Image 1 (cartoon, rainbow, N blue to C red):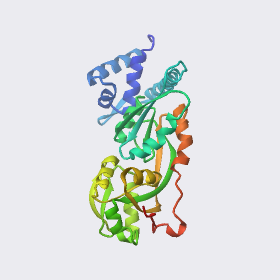
Image 2: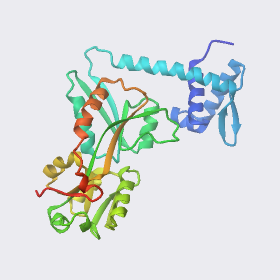
Image 3: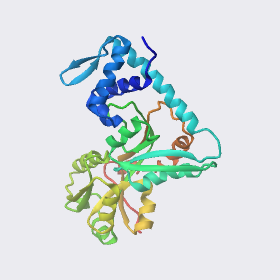
Image 4: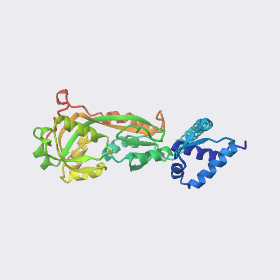
Length: 316
């Protein structure tokens, strides 16, 4: 066997992780023909076939699994080397590349990231926003250090990753002063037929809201659904309906937008996670975020007597 071609090994590793040449070509930004040809050369140099075809999908055979195990260790060490060099002191600002799932309120993202800005050493934060699956693809190829999401690592994805709970808080309900005067009394029963702005299907809080409304036997009138939390807030600020938001940012929403907190419940707990390729977080800025997050997000729950019923908000 000739000397191991690490570029070919990387192509093989990517095909194995994505489950096919077409997906690997998207990940590597190469044509499928190029990858197929390089993969054949790699198998020829090793003297073994590494895959068997099952339908339209490629699966590793015994030799392929052995090579893949070695490749995992090789590229894991390479990732550690890149991380060590990137974090090496040398007068340059520490870089933190963060993906923020679009279902996460922008104020929550800032609340979490501001602790990194308070670090004594210079830091440069690069933020990317988008759908969680697209961000996970960038995380897999190390374009991102972490993802801030409102849900754990999704099951059955072709990405090696781990989720770390940063914190959780109650859910508050907000509206313009005019709407609040109409719907604050007898919260949450007053939400029957009230105009409501619902988070999109990707938001982890959505099914919890729906279950809570069902348990309370309340049927609000859903006037809009929004994948983007900032757009939902803009409609709420314009008076289009009542909306839910994490209680951790209640003060900011009241002060910045002049909105009124109608009520709050601990029956709907919003959770926020850091998703990384590391089982154990090591990036100094991420550790700072993790350390500060529990205090920033841990908003006191509503009293036990208010559980599943809600608690009226303080008049503004």
